[in-house]
Length: 115
Image (spheres, rainbow, N blue to C red):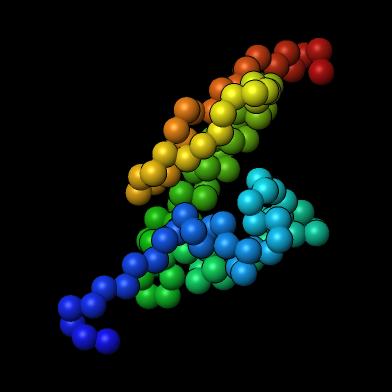
């Protein structure tokens, strides 16, 4: 490899690669990340490289996972969330891959006393 050569890795393509994730690579399956015991399944950093890997692993990775768990648990505890059927789901090409049309959902407040 010469000093002028560049290596580009497409995280978008890696996340949808049948060679890496199997035949159902294009399906949304949150259970991929949950072990049979109900804990978080271990996935090597080099397989899911969103937070980089090796000596360049993101320093905020663990903190970001804790924050996501706190926010999601608070939302799920207080609200019911239903995805609106028929809404187009498509990524917008960007470094962080936001959804092109957003994700339309219907949110209703839970009544914790009645449940």
